[in-house]
Image: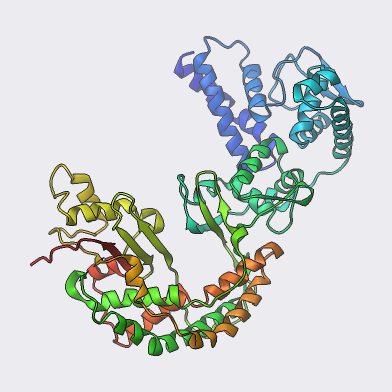
Length: 542
């Protein structure tokens, strides 16, 4: 068929295809996805066809097949019956739905499990015997009879009940942000799996209460036939975990949909007290540890830039309060090699809107710590944390090992600013790792990261212990907002992270405000809290 004719047909029948999807899915968002699939399949099929005489019937068959693979698009019978409940099978097709009871019965079949759907389909639609079905499915005949009987009972029950659409079928959640702690896989981080809104809502449907596949479908207001493959996919990648009674739970952390500003403010006040103590007692120890260190390259020569990075590392990595909770079960293990704890940030409203804040709280956000190690050049390694003190963009996704490898090649004389290395040099300039006059613009240390970081002193245990009660109190209060299976993680994270990036940023605020460190220039903001390690250093310019 010519393209212009196919375009005309799609335009003419689009509203009917969309209406078909709406009635099948019980969810506008999922209906749009189904409609897009139907339109694609219809359009490609029309382009391949020489001529279509019954356009409406042709589109109806493709729509029905796309929606439910277990339903045949052509039948020989005029109708079949499951214990008196008629399921019509048409030779003449129409996009408009028929009797309301017929639609309800079709829907209930779609809510059956995959095995029972297949048995019902083979027995009633294909007229196959029990023995044939048992042989094809490699099941005992008694098992097939049992499933068929259970399917009949479930259909009767579902047909007579008022099936309720769960909360997520009416108001699905949306992620404000997705984060991870651990190692990404070949396909990237959890965003690869959770950018699909249906996947996200399937996981959330079992967050507060374990559910079976059928219960997940009801909660989402959708038929199981449309969800089952996604549920299996999420289970195989660790986002869903099977528990007792063939129910699913998850160890993905979703931030609460309500939060107490008073509790958050109390935590910030406690951390500010800690930051004041660390600025006085710990920072001088870190600066003294770096006093005699050589073989460092610092753009502009400001050693405070390196000292600030070392202080940040020391507080965030060597100042944490220990928690003996085993949190291994919270790591999602994906089939592409990922292993990470996943956090999904939801938009939240205050549970205490009448509480009046007593302090202004700036952003204490930090991405990291991020570590990059080169397999190509074993001496090349980087550590970085992105905060409001740096000008780097793109967080972990834009922090590429290849950038450090290219910079190492430039420093080593393996590449030059010429046509051969144009792409690498351009990328380094875009990142501002190289200035326009080809000066290296990030801090570098000629040493291993292990040796350098080992020189940064540990926070004294006596100092650390005086903060333990604050951390535990906050962790216990925070955990009450989470479902039971998540509370060990929340308590552990609250304790371990109580002295972490947030306190490190608070200490930076103190040091830059009181004049201990001079204000950062724009060039210095490129490498703030970013250190590259290698066996070579750049030559000083000028």
